[in-house]
Amino acid sequence: MRIWSNSFEDGQPIPAEFAMGQADGFAANRNPQLSWDGIPESTRSFALLCIDPDAPTVPETVGRDDMEIPEDQPRTDFVHWVMIDIPPEVCVIEAGSVSDGVTARGKQNPPGPEGSRQGLNDYTGWFAGDAQMGGDYYGYDGPYPPFNDQRVHRYYFRLFALDTEKIEVPQRFTAADVLKALESHVLGEAAVMGRYSLNRR
Image 1: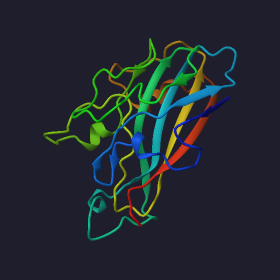
Image 2: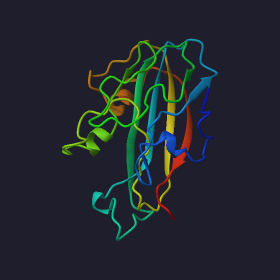
Image 3: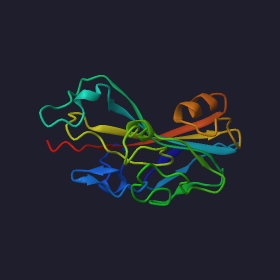
Image 4: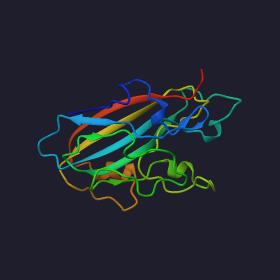
């Protein structure tokens, strides 16, 4: 089982077109193209996650002109996309078909393959309390790492082939809910990774 993207090469930079942020502010925020094959025969659905494991853990260091976030600062996951119940006949998600632009307060009903469901990404928590941007962010919202981070962030698009048509998660679900629910249903997994940074240095 393998997954790849025509929008970027594995391990290489993700174009700004597929990011939420660029050097001068918001970017196009289109989802990248993804394709997969080599699927286990008994696959009944897919789950797709996009996770950045390089998010800073000290909020006070983010977005400051007077310092850079050290590369060795402890890091945590930041979830950019959660999609489940993708039908087994689907093997391509076209660029811009799920996300195309930044939606203040989050996309409430993002498009996707018929029958699929999309969960909350971590911009929900990041923008919480912001009068203009706060809300529930469903579906894909791309990279927007701190401009003062010394670390180049990595974005893993993880695809899971499952033995069930639907996994049991709350109506308002997160990546953590999905990872817990699919534990006993995974037939195969594949990943492709892209990099992104806004640090001019």
